[in-house]
Every structure is written in structure tokens, then in C-alpha cells.
Image 1: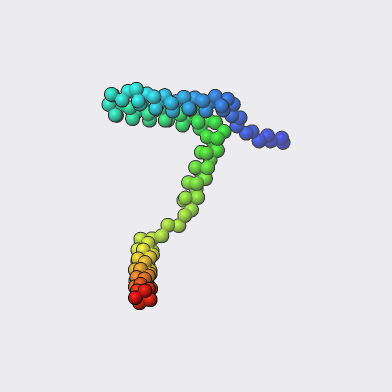
Image 2: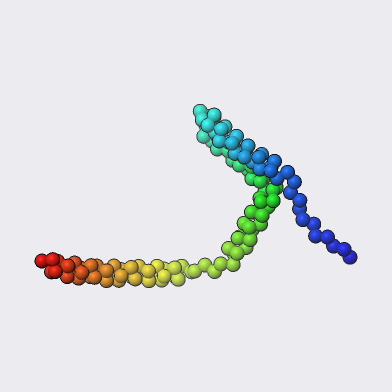
Length: 122
């Protein structure tokens, strides 16, 4: 059997990116031009343009690779073991205790060095 690995061909990618840029420019110019209109209508128009621009960008080689990266990141995010509430509280208390102890040590060191400097200077 002869099995061919078919890769998706992305044709006219530069033209698709020009369409994406044109949609973004149209959104910026349209939002400025229709500044007297209600904010709701302008936001809805920008959302529609953003969805269309993302749809066009997804059908490019870079857009497909970005989507694959996002999917891979989501898979890795599901593998993360998040700390429990108790572990988070304990870690936070340890950090607070270390900060307090170090601030006291640095305050004492500063006071000591200030006393030494003032006794030398006179």
C-alpha cells in the first residue's frame, strides 16, 4: 500500500493577510468615523470584524500553526498539578514570616551601621 501524507496547502497567504490588515484598518477607521453612534453598536461591529479577521487568519499557515500551539498549551495546562488551598495558605504564611524576619534583620543591621558611622564621624 502506498500511503501519502497529505499536508494542507495554504494558497494565497499574502492576500489573506492583506484582507486581515484591511479588516483591522476598517475597524479602526469605522470606529473613529462612527464615534457619534452608540458604543454598543461600535463594539458589536468591532467584534464582528475581529471574528472575521481571525477566521481569515486561521486559514493561513501561520494561523494554523498558532492554533496548534494554543491547543498544545491547553493540553499542557491540563497536566499541571495545582496546589490545594491549604498548601497555598502555608506557603503564603512562610513567605510572610521570612519577609518579616529579614526586614527585622536588615533594620537592625541598618541601625548598627548607622550607630557605628555616627560614632566615627562624631
